[in-house]
Length: 403
Image 1 (cartoon, rainbow, N blue to C red):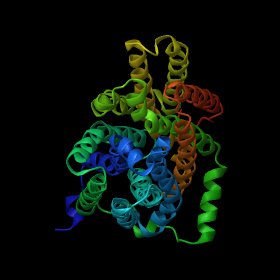
Image 2: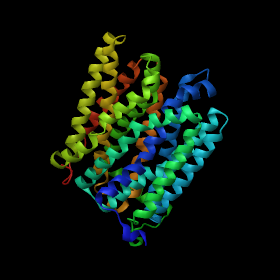
Image 3: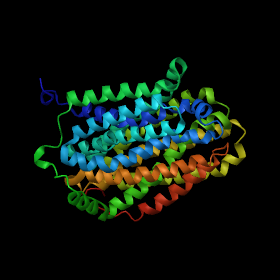
């Protein structure tokens, strides 16, 4: 029986999109418990370089995002996800056998390029079937699935490391991508029929990019997402070291990370309900103001409580704020920016995702390299990014559907 006879309902479709999108979270967060061993084995003279295992993946994803959208507009959504899955699996195998940190990083870039398929095309598939606040709602609920993986990924990574060594994590990535893409292939019909596909040509791509970047709401959305990604990637890059070196809780890290992710998990569904009542712009602005306030509070208070239990509690609260903020803003920003661009949703998603992801990866890498044994550099950067994002949202134009 063909996939057309097994078309998923809204709930299954949302779960499927969440699992595909969770390729990103799983690929990053499962590596976190491995960073000390990677640093000791491949970069003993500069342990901060081990963080590049994370940001190199993000950089590759940013590069891949630029191409996957236009290809999905021309070839269809599912073929591009399949191509990305092959690249992702190849990168995982190469990373498993790589003898040096530099080669592992190169393989991680290839993995990231492959992960761009699920990252962009899932958004385009949602836009093919939904629009406006309904699209924002679907993305928000998909974020619930997305946030489950950060909760369990470090625990899975720690278990794999304990039993098979840190390189075996790459084999787990291979199994994950095969199963998730098989689910898509079996259950989900193509969402972009041939009649709606764009001819792939440099002229058409250039025209679509020009149209995408000419819109003020897209420009601001990209910049705001870059700030949010910078804070998020910086937090993820240094979180294991903060637990281990600042608070001497490295052995507890996977469990605390699980707790933080689970506490942040309701943010997506809550946003999915609230955005239908308050609108995307209000949700984004309100969230950014909360991040700004909490970062300022943490920066002022942290110096007083650095060596006490309150200092650890402050750090947990700050990290939870950053994780939750992503769920309350990124889906809304994507839906807001793509609202007038349904006819080129793939290319528009690519342009937006590529610029914001690469920018966020660069900012996150910079933040991570400032780690000095305390969370203060991270909190300071988060405060700066939140202040910039709040200012940018004041310039976001109003639209009829995204009031």
